[in-house]
Length: 100
Image (tube, rainbow, N blue to C red):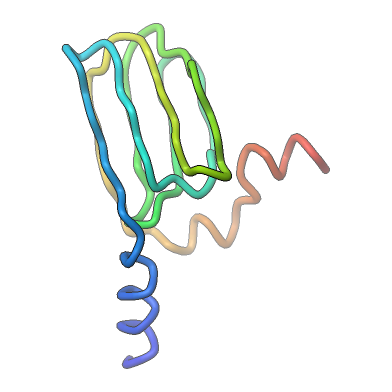
């Protein structure tokens, strides 16, 4: 049990910011990987869990995994965090799928 708490503290030591401007532009920092994206949803692995962004006509304007930054444009309808750590273990992420 103590190990899980230590992992949770270690994972949240990174800074994460989510900025939404007029529900049409979103900047997210602290991302670790992109699981999937299309015009209706973007699923990200972040230092604070899985972040799901739902919207319409979503487009990724900037993606820099090394810096942990993502910029999305489109109509943002909803944002949801999830602590489903096992999803990351089962998925290789978007970039991992591209370079298989």
